[in-house]
Amino acid sequence: MEDTVKEIEEFIDYLVQAGVHCRVDELESAYHRNMQVYMLDDSDQLTLADKSAFIDLFKRKRDAGELPLNSWTKIHHVAANNSSALVIFSRKNNLAGQERKLRLGIDLVYEDGRWQVIREIIFLEPPYPS
Image: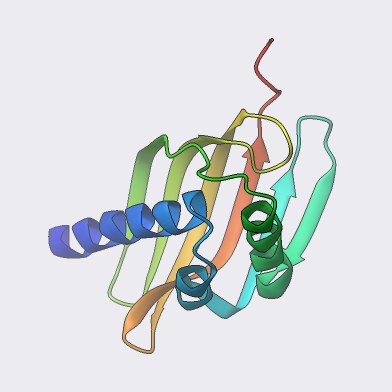
């Protein structure tokens, strides 16, 4: 099980770096075809996205020259078996227009010989004071 946790931690690093540098081809591979994203901001506004909508967000950031994003990541917990996992971690980035801290719960599935994100639940903290 320790090997699986390490493998998942490495996958999260790969996923973060793909997002930080808006490497859409890597995100295409890391995100499951049925991925769903639920993003709750600090004003209780819930935004839902599927794989293509979430990848489009990274394409827009890439095309606007907003590279790279902040790569700060802290993994708090990994629960895993051979076919699925839950990762709880924190990030700092400008995903929603302002630099802020995000708390994430990501569900992974092991399918087609690789880990893939099937669900992301993102909680945005208030923006940092100027």
